Amino acid sequence: MKILTPNSIPEALRMLKDGSPDARPIAGATDLLVHWPDQRTSHAGPFVDLSRIDALRGHRWTEDELVLGALTTYWDIITDPRANDELPILPRAARTVGAVQIQTRGTWAGNIANASPAADGVPALMALDAEVETAGENDTARVPLDAFYLGYKQLNMQPGWIITAIHVPRRRCDFSSFIKVGTRNAQAITKVGAAVTHSDAGWRVVANSMAPTVRRCRALEDALDRGISIASPDALIPLLEQDLAPIDDIRSTAAYRMNVLARVLFHELAPVCPFIGTTSGRNAP
Amino acid sequence: MRAPETHSTEIHLVVNGESTRVSVDTDERLLDTLRLRLGLTGTKEGCGEGECGACTVLLDGLPVNACLVPAVQAAGRSVETIESIAPDRLGHMLESGATQCGACTPGVVISSHWVRENPHLLRTHSIRELMAGNLCRCTGYDGIVEGLAAAIDAENPDTHDNGERA
Image (cartoon, rainbow over all chains, first blue to last red; front, side):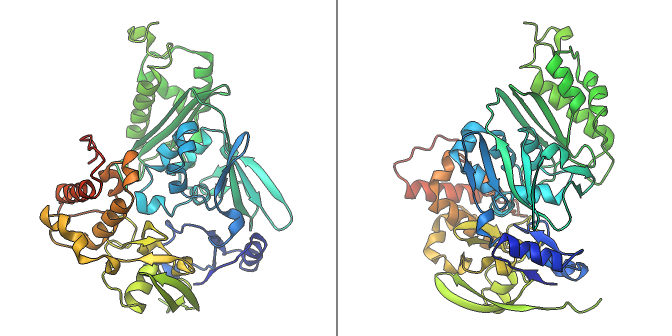
């Protein structure tokens, strides 16, 4: 097994092409190196380490976007006062990933590319309408994050390309909430998760660990945008079921996941949506 | 199982303040470079999957799990291990009974040292959140948190503990 260390994007793309189809890019390597002594021989490789490429480093604020270079870590955003002020759902999500030792290494772009349905960074980015910028040898592309997953671990990206940046609109949200249900506060993989925002663009409700990919709950978003009355947590379930398909696995069950998601969403939304929980009278205007 | 195919490369890094050149396998973990090539065995391997924090070292001043860092990613950077910590820095931890079986202690000491060096982090984080990546299976967290809080208070006499720090 080889880890190659290119210094530029063109060099990295060339190495990925030469190593195709098995070559894979890595950044923080926090997922890859788990139980590495047992795993290293099972990969065909090589891995192309992007961490030396200056053009992928750091994040910047433009007039209308936060641009995360592909090497931007969770910790970079946790410690950025502006992110905490303007886009607090990002640092809030980042602080639920592993613990500090993972947050200092793991990257937002790696979280997207690794494509785990349980990814915690992805729902927060998706609830902000982030877009993914990718690059190949002769071209670049920009795809909305909510169109970036075609299926379980299937990315809407050309083979041999890499993610170069994530573009997050600097849109003020008058409501944002990040929910993670796991077995403990730190070092836990999400059983049920969601990121919810409201802005001029409307409602966004994004769930993780609830489908083969992180996914927007469009039927619920639409109901919220139209102000449709939702009387109870159970009344949310038929809306959620239109977009989500949780499974039984080692961490939880499909039934638990759907029940818990409906309940946490109901209790997050009821205080801010007068049309939610109205029949009980608890939120009557 | 076939023997792992190895590819070597030389990296240059600063370890505990000393400029160091070392030949590593390109797919080697920083943990193994430190322990097996440089003889810095104070850093321990616990779980090998980035959960327990026993292998915590500082990479360019930030805590990382050395079991999850490819050694080639430490090239040109600075690494601090438990061996760099002066024994007199451990006083508060000894007084509070912050060590029990000792398995987690090297990582706990490194993370505690980092929090002590960066007390501004306590404006946004609790000690428990900053230390959440260091698991103690004796469950001796109270002693660890109290020892660290006492050390920080002693080093930052001007800050007032609002009682929520821990």
